[in-house]
Length: 561
Image (cartoon, rainbow, N blue to C red; front, side, top):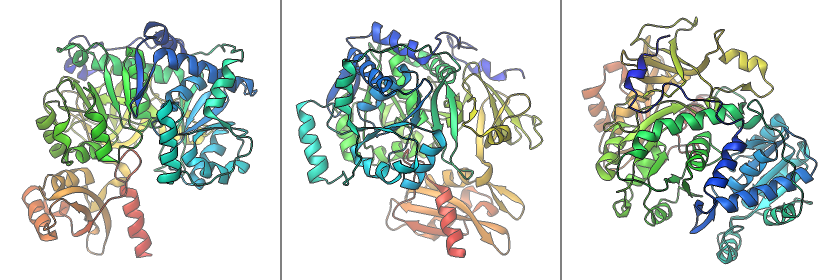
């Protein structure tokens, strides 16, 4: 297919990247350790570590893991929020020749057990706050080695106070018993005295098993090779250059990492992207604490702010938001869910920086498309394919549809996963004969190469034979000044098969269902207007802040049953 989108590329962005620049992620990391050793690499809770610290500590932890007899290619699970141990542990696992299995720390025992068993993880590094979950399932898994960290581990003297508050005052560490477990700092100290043997790691070795949300039943591990992640780091790097090099000059890029590092968006767009550029990440362990988050942001001049719509929206609605200095903000990347126009417009108005919406999946390391980093206006699209990436919009038979027609977004590029871990039949379902990955999202491509997501295949609502896409209805409702957040699903309807139902969190306590319906009538055709409206105090969300329509649908099914 002709790459019609290339004409949208800003000057200096190449059509293709050299995916063979590094043999593995380890070379990329070690190049930066040598180049930027004295620079700060991560901040968390007022404590920072340098690239030299990250180099030395990760090497010690890698030697410790090797000393446990783990063979090359072994899987090591990481179960932590954004704390300084995270980059140290990730780097150590990769340097030792193992694969990182990223685990959401808020997983239930059932979810954790599935992921540990499915991945065959032999070791886990966990923050003590979540060790009780590990205790409940470890006997039924292949995990033999447990390393336990605490919030205060790497915070110096302040760490003792932090641990005291976390354990005794806030009681955030439920009791647990994991005999034989080793403390994080002890493992690093022990590793300093051990010999590290540098394994030969190639582009086709597994770097990460990134488990997808399991929207199609059981959660599956996307197998991301060193070359997949490397390609996406280089794609993102090339894509952001026009914004980063524009005045005012920035000596060291400062990235806000409020998205969880166990999520592919933060892993690539915050952690690895910053390391490649010798940048610094501000780690936010709990972005839901908006007051605390804003207090952190007030201490720094940030340059890059990747986030999801709900996070941007939450900040904008906080009374102290105006106290943050955004004068050096160059890039705001939106992903993970649709960015809503009212949020984007308000963000631009208050920070002076446009949100460049992008799109990707765990299976694609993650970025596939993005709006240009220098775009001055929000356009409601997911942008154009990043370098070396092909997007094709196809019908159910795998044929490309004409421009402007909806179809499934299919993608090809060096960032696309090797397949689902140990699930060849699931992999076969999502790959086309000509090597494209089927995303499961419905989109259209405009004649100028921009792609717009219409919706998830499974989120589509069928009203009297008409397709209704929740994104469109949500965008309209969200633009009502009395609405804070909303979600739209389809519910059974005797007359029309399905009808539209909206769940709304109010900003204005006086808002009524009638107000919403009247407002929708002005902007939506009749069959798209919600027939039912339910007001809530909050909506179910993933850890990244993505609203879970699925949970709302499941609630309705349970009630109906």
